Image 1 (tube, rainbow, N blue to C red):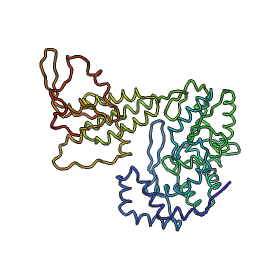
Image 2: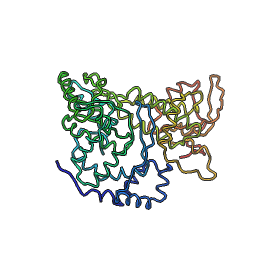
Image 3: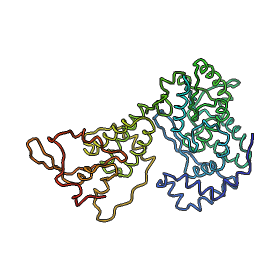
Image 4: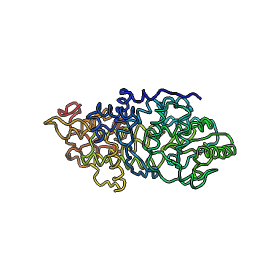
Length: 459
């Protein structure tokens, strides 16, 4: 198998470190540690380069926190300085590993990802009758450092690069305990072995794929880190494959989670990467929809309270909408859009969000801050930042925004109501507004003048 050398000078070059710093600061430019590093970026990079060249570089400590969705996991965040080194290593080394990876590996690869893996899964569901869903139990906490370093040395032979990668691997913090004995082990050997990679490092995601490269070539089916699917037309054949996979993974010192490994018909649907996949349709998981709905309601409440900018609210909505429309969820997206639109029109009056969900969403907002919009010019009306005018709005909505609304009751008396601040969700029209407001002349909403005559209309 081909291996590569003379890589360390490319990793330590100032150009590569600068490119790594720009990648590491993406979506994190306004954090304190990133701001301190960027204030004297040239001096910091030159000092980091000197430590790498002289081999005096030592990784810092991790910041640990726990998440509960979709299951309880410990996340380890490395210091920004170490993340720059991780990106510098991946810029040079990981393209060499990617050449040897299977075409059906979709995790942490450019042009792949979860949506491509789901489409590949649906393609196989149309071809085969049965599917075997497999999951490796506690994959990242179970990765053996000795086996991983042996896998790395099959591709990299540069001694200095191996020293740096070993330093990053050995600096891993203590993960969840995994008590598993394999054939030929005793209690003393199991206690001395270093296992576990921190979830949250870029190098951990890549090395997790490298760890199963040989296994992936042996299986050659749809694989996404520790989740993979096998397809066949005979269910008994899939069960035989499961027994063979158990033996093969034992050589890698990991094991299957037998509670999640089962074979069933593809016509019944398979849950994979957050979606329920059938041969000719796809749906989002119910748990994911409920969590997204709570999150969006919380964001709408934050916007109406004035603590979340309009640009951030629109960005979060469009992000989830783009993800949801990858499946057959047009009706679901329209329903949630109408719910949010109604909440924003009412000013979230009377809506209740659980404190647990509020704390979770507030923590996520702090961990993933967005860029703040530009400040308003002096003399600009405060409501101009709160009211959006999107291309998806109708002509009547533009006419009614910021004006006094006139309603005609059943007796023919015109009643005025003050204007309400609204925030329309872009990307989707208002084709259902007539059915929501009701038909007929009684209680219908109309305007005294045509939309073109409004002097205060903003475009």
